[in-house]
Image 1 (cartoon, one colour):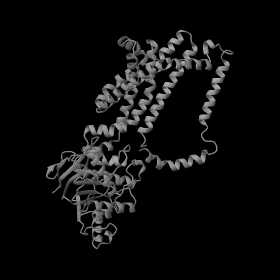
Image 2 (cartoon, chains in turn yellow, green):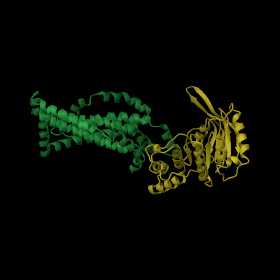
Image 3 (tube, one colour):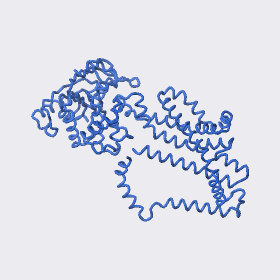
Image 4 (cartoon, one colour):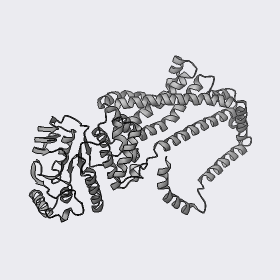
Length: 258
Length: 270
């Protein structure tokens, strides 16, 4: 088991008011698995990622990575956060080279790695652009490239394609699957989008409202390699979708969390 | 390779500019030259008719004094001295300010402890420190450099400190998650993010440093533009005083132009 949450709870104390965000979350993720977390807004999805990344500690229970308690930032885990965090004063290539700089790689090998990853995420030709000159989708690609460039064994992604339009989302999902396929990397992917979760994942974990527990785990049986355009026509898609929808809907009045 | 950036933004901007200004280009520089010419003409005409040249000299006289100083080399020697003092004071004051601000910026406690003291010292007119520095360091370059440095220091320090406190926490978080150390965060995020604020401090501080250097020169010195002004005034050489003032203007203008060019290069990502 690569990632383990064992009865994890998390309370935040803000000005005397205690908010219980997580209450007894159990979650095991195997090496090489693609797991999505879905749940209503405020269900602590980002909190779980923060715990896995070592940005935060559980108030109760255990969080382990590779059998070891998570006690701080772990360099083999990459975390693609929701907000834009490209450094605005660095060009695309310099932004992507940043994690390699932090690992003291020499200039020549940094250049090679950056060129390679840029072409894989479809940003070749934009090396010398600054982030503000890129569209939202290209910024996401640049952030994805910055995450992949140092070859982390585990990647946490917090709604990486959230604000993008439907077509662009499909393109990026397709690229992500291509990059992940056969890489052996473990991905934990937070999303609001049930279709996206089914399309990408081996397993989809549905979280309840606060205080959050694991509400339902859906094994996605659609065979790989998948084509993001065809997934919704797979025979089992309907039943996965219904199961997930029902699991979420119990805790939402109607409609889909957004 | 700033060209890549300019190329992408230039076409639309250029198209708009040519269409709007085709008939007359930008007339402002021309108006400025006209304005200066009119003022100088009035001055020249009034001198000797409305006012005694002993008090106001005249543009032609000032021009010939400047020319004489320039050909004899006096102007350049003194200019160079003042420029040296300002530049040295500026570099020393600004680097100390940035380093100290980065240090104090680490801890909210340190900042709050030091704040009233720094604000109090900041409030003292720096020129009032000149006698002290002359007493300590003599009449050479040193007291001017120190006074210039002190004048620059506070503006850069306070600006840098606000810049550090404004840094986007999410950028720091991102680099932490990539495995960045404390030094990495300072060097690769905090410093570049605070740079616009630091630059504002530098731009505000430069004239103050210049004032510090010249003021100290006027009190006790045998070289520099401040000395030249004082010396000319001592001999009732009004044209000399104006010529020296004009030289001072040239120094500030060129220092500001240099800083402006540096700023455009540093912030080409904007």
